[in-house]
Length: 436
Ligand code: SAM
Ligand code: SF4
Image (cartoon, rainbow, N blue to C red; front, side, top):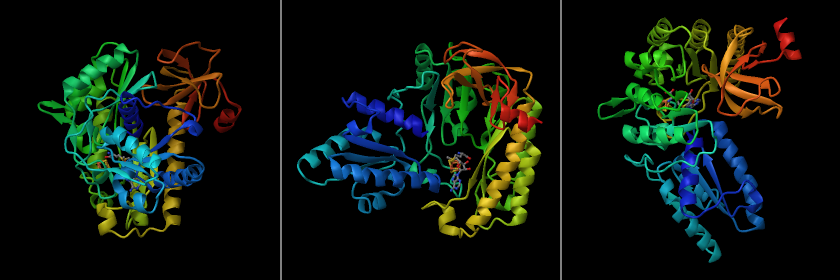
């Protein structure tokens, strides 16, 4: 969502004549687009600010904080961080050109005026702003913004405000333009994407309509909530040929008491039943999840329930997070953050180790098969290799000499080796070690 918001901001600023540079030394304005979801994202911003403080001592510079931290920490960021000139929350990006221009003028006049725009809106969806997309293969479309679920650990309802959905005709038109520009994949975005509703349109209808746009080869969506999976949505995922066979299904915990404290609105049994429904409909749909370890008052026995459910469901992948108390949330106000950091760390490690083993077992089943991959570009590790994703969102890496192709192509890649996170078209020395 932050990548997408940065594309919106680039578009809004370019319209007003601002130009972008990759070279920090040449920038007159530096904007940090921030996330407030967990402590580590938050800490990274403070470490960037410490760097910028030095730069700002040497020359004139406007520093802006955008996104969820601007919304949540406005007092702290304006008074304790005097180097911040502009703050704009997720619903205030339209005001950025004016705020930045004013901050530049204020510096020229030797003044220190701050520009603040942090009001949340019930209507803002940026439906008329065409994001400045640079990827070329995947295009994000935010179909809804905000969230009304108030999971007790989560800051999103406070930083991104109430749930609101974009009109479906505008979304389908945008999908058509994206296809005409040559993008091959669309990822529909929303904090709670499958609660999308606009008039008689629900998420199942929207997903099918976007997937029917000629030229688009793959459609994904993130992040859904397990409570919003009617049969019609499962049918579209299972049977539409261009909707990827992958569902990210955040579980958070396997304990009913913890799920209830988290305000997740499902039980262990209901979550399991949803997984069964998905797998009965189509066993090859890849399931991934999010899990929080060490939520307030989580006992060893309750953690063991999460461990057991993870082991039984055998997700393809899982993102495991240490519970991190967030300002303003229900949990921060009502429940003490009473699990020792060392215990949280140990629980995360146990779940990560378990999941790595399961992911490796899933991935090894592909060895000897040929998988269909959407080519993304050069791999991060080596310019002589390509990388791309399978339909089930597994990363694949192969030598460019083996299979010449271009980003955006759909190609068949023979799998010769596998790690917990990646499939390879060649055998790696370390891969053989793991396999033996
Ligand atoms: N809307 C999605 C859902 O319903 O699960 C979640 C989106 S949230 C932006 C992404 C993930 O961050 C969550 O699924 C959760 O596991 C994790 N997360 C959110 N708040 C957290 C917190 N306070 N501490 C640790 N992890 C957190
Ligand atoms: Fe946060 Fe997701 Fe819960 Fe909304 S549904 S409050 S985004 S965890």
